[in-house]
Length: 266
Image (cartoon, rainbow, N blue to C red; front, side, top):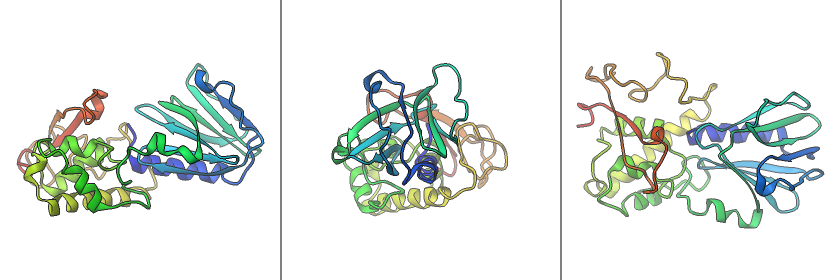
């Protein structure tokens, strides 16, 4: 699943192509909104909220999308042929640009005044104007028996972090993914949340997004995607395992993956 920094960059690309321009094409390819038509409405802006995207249009409507595991937005000049098959879930276009939502996990249309119905459950956004490390720490501490690796992925605690930055944050903090939250002091939890923010904040302006498919040697990861390879700090082989589902409702196998150093994070 794309991390919050990748979703942030996607929102920026959508803003560049759609903001302030009137839609000339609006094609919802999901049954629930198949008859929705936004043509003639100007796009106001697109923002990211954790791993969610909110595209606000004139008239008080918001297009809510979520990439989930395989989704993406492809921006191209207007009129460019779309991918074949049934992978396109949504097309929004103006006279200059078209944005095609590919394999989107969520496509919804909500009143802008009611966006909280789809994102109100999220904790403070690691890359958003509402970022609050102290609040994130309090959220993390609400279930002291939980492992910190599981707690970090729960978007109700802090929004936007995924398997990549969870692994890198815990490595930088020298914390085992299975250490109980209750054994970590409030000050340490706040520092951990601040560290996750700092790592993601630096990554969001990266010229190339880091994705689950880009694990080539030379990338700046310390543990993520490096199972069996030597730790850059101590030389011990990096391990790979799984943590429980953050929500208790199950999760995609890749969402549960964790990489860690058994020595540095003992």
